Image (cartoon, rainbow, N blue to C red):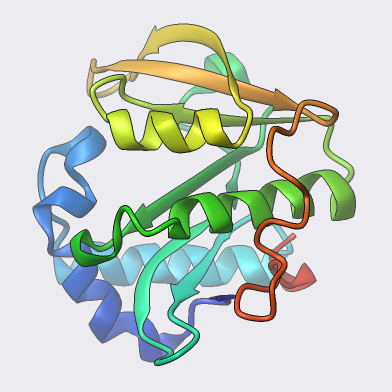
Length: 185
């Protein structure tokens, strides 16, 4: 299920961000509580400014925060702007269960249908095979190889046009995983 990130999510979000694997790509380290607090503040500011932002990915059965996913402007990579990126991050114990694909599909549908986007990108390090596989399932195609301008790591930019979706637009629209709310765009 997707919902906006809230102040009450900070403790669990901090636990997730403290997992080195959560931020392995591209930082190769965990984030501190201060970095996580700043992240949450930026996300909530984006909600207020009606700009694309990530949302909480929570288990419908328990309401447990297991990660986040959403749309954002990839300002860290100016060579591809203007662009909107779809991305996701999940806690270790919740990977490989289809949550990234489901959340990504919901956000892609939202980006194309509600925001009227013609193109969405997704960016990953080629050694992150799992994220690359999610992008392929979602229908993304390779656009370009580049380097992260600060970290110097290789990145693959994948893109998806409005008519190129591989999965049904209904993926991610079940009662347990509604599309993101319009407050995020």
